Length: 510
Image (tube, rainbow, N blue to C red; front, side):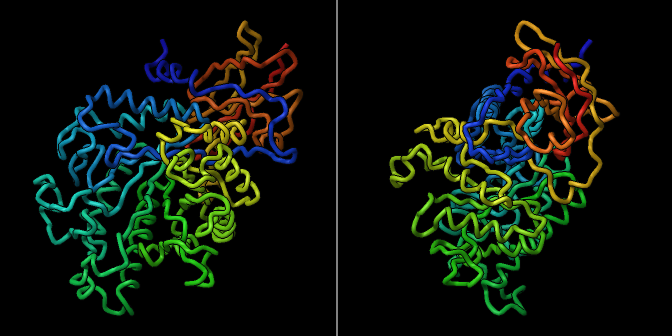
């Protein structure tokens, strides 16, 4: 009798495996679709932006909403979700460090009646999607009154840890005990859950002024630094560097990365900067984003390039080459944060009213091989698709399925065992393919290829003949509605690091 896990995977298989017809792609003739490409979206929880859609939903309602977001990810042919599970020094799991998030129940510290993180990770993996746990490192509250925090909140127990600014509360990044505590709180999720990545957003220090009053900490720990900004920048550097060390020590097979604001420094401030004139993360947020890449502290960086092509203060067409140059020759992958939220928004410039603007971004990315894919902000905009901009981008660029990227440091690891293709037989609904795993470890995914004839080993290096990616199991059955007599099928096993096996035996449909 099949296991519950197998049955659940089977239910997800139909949604996860959409056949892609092989006829001529509506793309440049010389474009070769990559086998690996980041296709992600951010699912935000702070102030209930995406999930849950409002506080106080029942556990079943929250679960249903999350499954609907996975439906969106699959409909848009994505392979990864970045889910915000610690939006304001709180937790979407039973954390021993910080209280339950108020965005679950409406009351900070109140048990939602289930484990949202555990549920989300399990359901995401059933669909064959990667789950990246998204954390905000320092933000404590979206309101300024410490008395409104849960009585057991660390900020109440250690009032010297938090500072107010701009109507919000923050942990003080300059205190070593705060830095360690924040790391401990985040690593609790990393070590206890089967996540695929630890992800920081773009918020670090909230300002570059003394209005964020960390003068006492600077007086205590700032000796040897030329100024307040240098000390603050070092504090953020320590957080980034130490997080890398802790991830590598605890769970080296997951991805560690950051999605910063899109401008490191303007060329007017630094000759190494970009030809822009916008807010600078190095100065405004004390985040040396370029330095992190050059020092090898990240597996990937995903700058938020939320500007249109040709925008005067910050031109997308100038920032992509700049970031590509930064990432070139390093072990840090480059993925681009795309502003789905601006497309079709009547408050935005005329360029954002063009349905093809985001598609043009991805076309430009092709000129820069350092760009390994994109992450879309945010899930609701990916779903709503106001002027068809997401549909346009998907139709233009996601015609082939794609596996998520392989981290540079994991690329040389042991690949999964070569699977066996048991048969490829014509049925009433098309060609049914049955793949069987070998070896003790079950593949995370199977990639199914279809060719007109026999395929050489080199033919599996790209996605030109990739027709489906399906969740892994000991064995899977999948039907290709476009299969026909004479087609040759092959199957490749894929592990959680997105490493691929040698192709299976071929099977010709008769």
